[in-house]
Structure formats: structure tokens, C-alpha cells
Image (cartoon, rainbow, N blue to C red; front, side):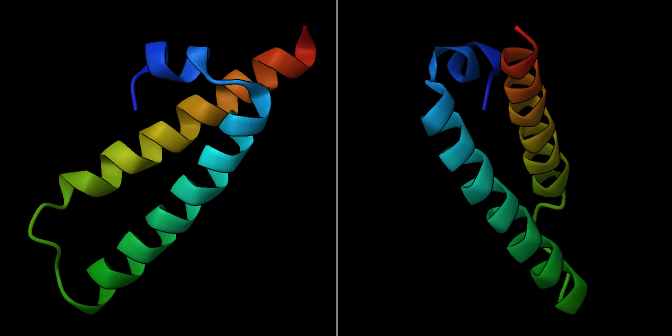
Length: 63
């Protein structure tokens, strides 16, 4: 998910998306541990999306 998309979401939507994305990342990690993923770059992209969302939430809490 791109930063421009993240900034347009409301705080509630962002928290919901963050939970879903974290669950997706955990599922991908488990699947990769069992048998290698066809595209392991997915792990990096999802992890970075989680970080972007968490950063945006923190930024909004500070303001």
C-alpha cells in the first residue's frame, strides 16, 4: 500500500487495515517457513506496508 493511499484513510480504517495486514504477514511467514513462496519479495512488501501504517498512526497520535 502506498503512502498516498494510507494518508487518505481515516484513523479507524487505518487501524483495521493494519490488523488485517499484520495477519496477512503472519500467514505469509508461516507459509514461507513450510514451503518457499513463489515470490518471497511479498514478505518485504507486506512488512513495509505494516511499517508505513504504524508510522502514520503514530504520527496522528502525536498531533
